[in-house]
Every structure is written in structure tokens, then in C-alpha cells.
Image (tube, rainbow, N blue to C red):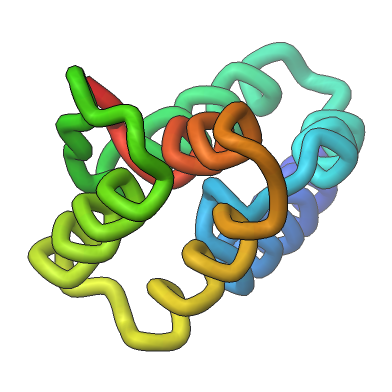
Length: 116
């Protein structure tokens, strides 16, 4: 892979990552990001970047001992506000988290927060 190709790949990856929050990337999009790069070093850099961004943007959410969907959503909302999420981000999370059963709520919390 020549330096020009490497630069193009880096630009595409950066543009894609900047458009979305890491937790909003689907598995297909992550696979697409990895497919853009055939070089193992680039693939490792992509993986590391996604992990770092995901951890940096995920506020901590303590839900141990909380078994009510309403209580979990209330705690999640408070953690998101404390982390500086916008109203739109919070509403998006709540909308996705409410659309299902208790298991779906826990999955969404794990996707958007560092659950402890």
C-alpha cells in the first residue's frame, strides 16, 4: 500500500468516525471500516481508536441492585446529563432503550455506558 492510498483510507475513516458517536456504529459499519484497510497496522489502529473513543465517551452507570426499568432510565439520564450529553443524545438513548423489554434496556445501557 503506497502512502497516498494510506492517506485516503485514514481520511475516510476519520470522516466516518467524526459523523457518529462510537456507540452508534453498527457492526456492519465497523466491518466496513476494517475492510477499507488491508494493512494489519491500520486494522489495529482502527480497533484501538474505536475502543478508546467508546470508553472516553461512555459515562459510568451504576445499576447494581436496581431492577425497575424506570429507575434504570432515571439513573441513565442523570449520568448522561452529568457527562454533558446533549438533550438530543439523551432523548435518542431513552427512545432506543424504552423500545423493548428489560433485557433490551440492559443491552442499550451497556452500549452507551460503562455499566458497573
